[in-house]
Length: 313
Image (cartoon, rainbow, N blue to C red; front, side, top):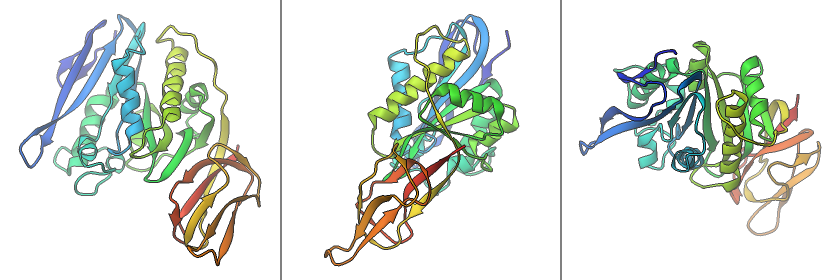
């Protein structure tokens, strides 16, 4: 079997172990660790990373991975599962997407051991975690007041990634090119395949998003021959491209279409009105497709992204 060493600790076949990688200290001098949970089967097989909280305010991912651990949902019969429920501890402590200096961890790879806090954690992930894995499922949400319908984002040029995205079985699979300095691109440069799952919005728990993340992960692990399970096959709609419909005026936003629904070009999706009922403007779909994300804010400004429309492949 291939050797697995993380932070100087050797993980042997059949071993389940928790490793705490020291990151830094808070201004109070409280030590901050990155907890990593590893479950390795006796029989060799793929290594899959399941991660949440790359953005510290994205609670659905954190809770999803926490549930996998506390309920022991997956016990590998082959290979290894590495769980990191909370990658961005600093963001979690401050209910923030980013680090105290405003840096985004997912734009800080491959990182540096002498750089910013985000860069240092990216460096740890790049050097301690990515070399040990074959695949990954990185669980995210939409932004503040922006809710994503359960979906997987993958670069369609990554044939293995696309195969696994279809296996995951979320309702939508969206073509998303690798972004410079992202976790997914850094892994891909090392020939590892990361699926980015999106569901719900930040700072709000979403049962559907959490359940779909668990179900999709189960399908992927079963497909890789790592677990024994019985699960229905998912049916995904492939989206070659997507775009946002933006507000043409500021005002009170009243949607009459929901995330996940099919829409037609010219269909009225919402109305925006002033607070006095004197002015009303209809919001129409810019194309045929599906609503894969929606703005939940009751008040919007001109130019705000309000409906994310995915277009079929």
